[in-house]
Image 1 (tube, protein in one colour):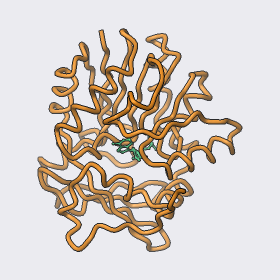
Image 2 (image 1 turned 180 degrees about the vertical axis):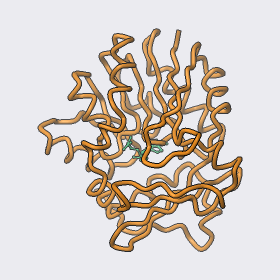
Image 3 (image 1 turned 135 degrees about the vertical axis):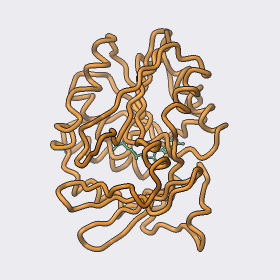
Length: 264
Ligand code: SAM
């Protein structure tokens, strides 16, 4: 039996919610539906360009494991680009939504519900690439969980596999202070995303929609160099980190980083 959650509940002290397991309760149905309704997939695809597809094709990747499927955006795009994709998420609600989105575009997604920390218990075989996109890794709130997840991604890969993992540029947010961080606008000014609270252990983002509804996500502010170090320590041999300048509003610094980590 699956229980559909409609309300976020961060308790009486939301900034104290710093647990890895929170993610399952944060992506409640109305929040996910609104995001999907307003963020047009075609314009999102246009703004990302074919970056991920190019990286995967350069390496001759065929089997791709999307470990942060969410509502299916990357899984579906990668399938449409010809990759053999398995779609994983720890949230059954997200996978159900991804499956529906896939069906609307004529695909039957192959979905597996799994938490990253136990990924290899639930998937079969090895992959040429693991993708963890859309600022997802930030949901892990302690270092053991991050190491475990990266180790699971590593062992899900073939010997010459690649991990592509992106993250928001938290260095800019942490270093310049929360008062100077900007609001990110998506879809014109339809959705505004703003870091309401920032400290070294938490960035609490506020998502406001045109119907005045407001949701939050508590995320761990990952520094770029720290993520690179963890990847190296887990065994990835070459890590290239790119800045993405393509978001809607930007100053000098990129809003996102993309790590491309090769196993050999
Ligand atoms: N990649 C999609 C996109 O860009 O639209 C979705 C990104 S969404 C921000 C993050 C996803 O990661 C959510 O669907 C969430 O359920 C999943 N997630 C977060 N922590 C996880 C974990 N420990 N194990 C499995 N999935 C997790």
